[in-house]
Length: 164
Image (cartoon, rainbow, N blue to C red; front, side, top):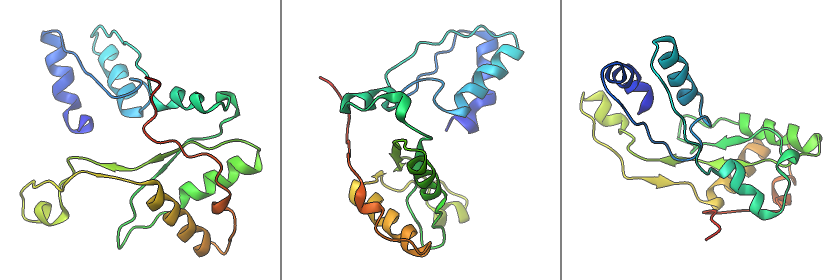
């Protein structure tokens, strides 16, 4: 991933032209912004070409972008890791009368825990969170927090946004 190769990208950029392509907007992730800041500190010229992203494509549903609160990511739960912080952010947005864009987890090129323990990098097959899994996890967090009846009030679900 980018975090692991940032130094190599910057080093090669000092000696030759390097292109770094991302899905979505190049400044949608802190890692990419950090890469630009570090490049500029090293005197490396940076040119950014903005791309389409889900952050602005969501407008296709008719909701105005300025009425969205903080965007949240819903991660895949594991047997030992079941965070609920995303639910708190959804609740906060609702209390302010704002929509919430929930980004569903994807697992691509993830090394298995077993392979890491053995010192090898064997990758698990790609997984893409479905809307059903996200809702199940929302309901689970809701129950753990002693609340009920909110998650079923979801109004719009968008999948694989595109206009053409």
